[in-house]
Length: 169
Image 1 (cartoon, rainbow, N blue to C red):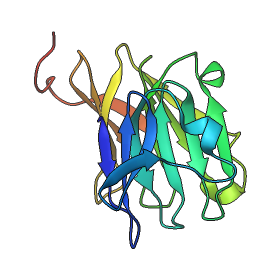
Image 2 (tube, one colour):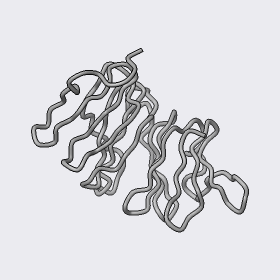
Image 3 (cartoon, rainbow, N blue to C red):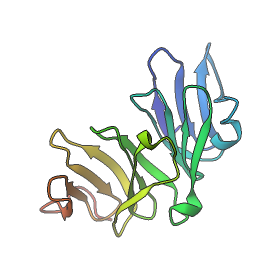
């Protein structure tokens, strides 16, 4: 299990090396909806339920969004430099930020009604391992080797944190 999510009034959701699953009545069963079954197989690393109760799942297949009716949309890894989605959050303005194993950070506006337009915001030298948006709207990005970086929202520019934090190997 790579990630767990406990949505409001719903069974726990798990991201695993074999796909996305639900914990229901003391059993783990595949996450099945009419439009999402085939899209939620493979290795998934991260999960998020947004303010509209849509499930977002990131992994080796790319980024998958399942809306409340069960319909699914995908940004395949072929559209994101053939990289896996390994980190995922919802920003304060409702945008979805995701990071990839290739070190790229993307932004998606879910209000557009379609999932196809992921905007590449920045490319870093190592895989993105963590994302966090602070109360000022700055996006913090943890990497697998160059520490923590910060995107200052007001200046719209990236800056490495004064010194890398944590392991750099």
